[in-house]
Length: 108
Length: 115
Image (cartoon, rainbow over all chains, first blue to last red; front, top):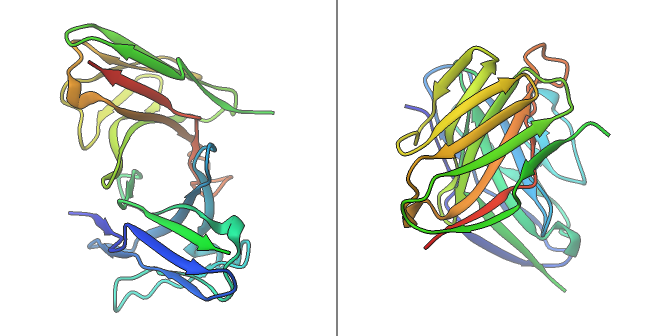
């Protein structure tokens, strides 16, 4: 069965500190992985996808198939990064399976 | 601007009542989804539709039904609402042609409270 886990419900860091939001998955095939973000009073939106190998708003994520992980990283956190972050996996049925989410709080 | 809209945005109802949540999109996408969001559980898929004549159950379909009235409209019904259906409900769309690389676009959400 497909499953996405995000072990931290809440992560607090100080402005300028590095941040890493963890995501692990279980899936028998080759997954497509995504990070979605939900800022306060806004709808969920795509942050980045692993196939694009892009950096968005300073965030990057590398798919590690050996560790079945897709951790989200940013070297210097900003206060505007405070939000709810969801890791998601897209399976062969072409549905998305979302993790429980991590709330990132960047303190001044 | 092409968008995904949900009505109502907030609803308070009583146990046993029938409730319909509506979703409309102007993105021209063929695929539509209904999720519920609960604290600590993330988003869970209720139902999804890949085309007008296609309806599929998701992870937590019990107690819900859907109707895909047109490509642009996908409604979610609670036939007899119960308190544990109190949640934030999201509609989402995606494009099977791959033009947006399978990204899902979300509506603003409907906050439903069942008393």
